Image 1: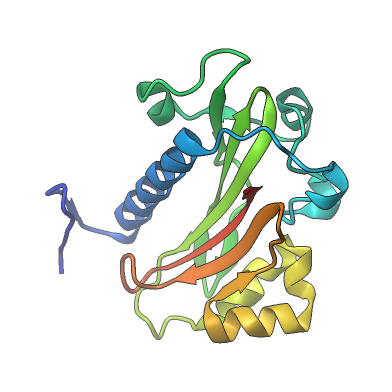
Image 2: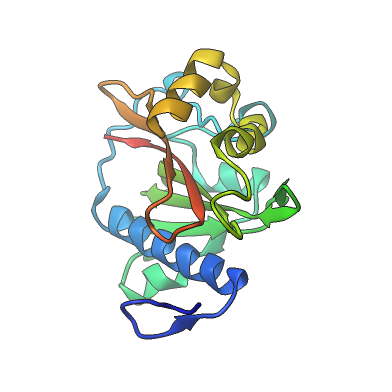
Amino acid sequence: MHILLPSGFRLRNRVSRMKALLIIISFTFIINCSFNTKDNTPTPQNQTIDYKALQYKLFIGQTKDSVKKIIHLSRDYNSMDRGIGNGDTGISCYMNVGEDLLSINKTDALPALFFNFYNNKLTDFTCSIIFARKSPENYGFTEFINAVEPLFEKLRIEENKTTLYKANYLNLGSKDYIERYKIDTTIMKPDMLFTYEKKVK
C-alpha cells in the first residue's frame, strides 16, 4: 500500500519512510533554530546532555569548536536556505548522521543529531531515532526502549524508563532548561520515533 504525503509524493518502502520522517524532524528543528536565540545559558555543570554522556560529555553552553573536536558537524543546509547561520555570530544549525546504527529485531535505525548554536555556544540539542517497523507487531515499546537505553544514562534509571514506557513521555527539565524524552507512533504508522531534546528555555 502506498502512503500519500501532503507534498504529493508516494512512499514505496521503509527506507523512503525513514527519509520522509527525517525531513519532518529536520524542519521541526529548523523552527526551533529560528527562534531559540537566548544567550542566558546556565552553568555547564547543570547542562549536561544525556546522549552518550560518559563518552561525549556534551553540555549546553559548550562552544562550537569544542563540540567539533568531539563529534563531526555538518551544516544544516535547509537552515542555510532560510538565512540562518551567518559566520560566528547569530544562529547556526548543524547536524550529524554518522552515528552507529541501532538494531532491533533485524531492523536498523540511525540516530540523527541536531545542534543549534547561538553566538558560537550550544543552546539546543536534539537526537531523533526512527524505527521503521514492518508492522505494529514487529516489536513493541519494551524492545524499543531497551534499544535506545544504552545511549542515555538517565534511561538506565528504572523509574525514568517506566515513566517513558507508560506515558511515552519523560520530562526531566527545570526552571533553566528543557530536557525531555518522547516516543511518537502517530506521525507515520507503524513507524516509531524517539526524540531526546535538551535546550535553554
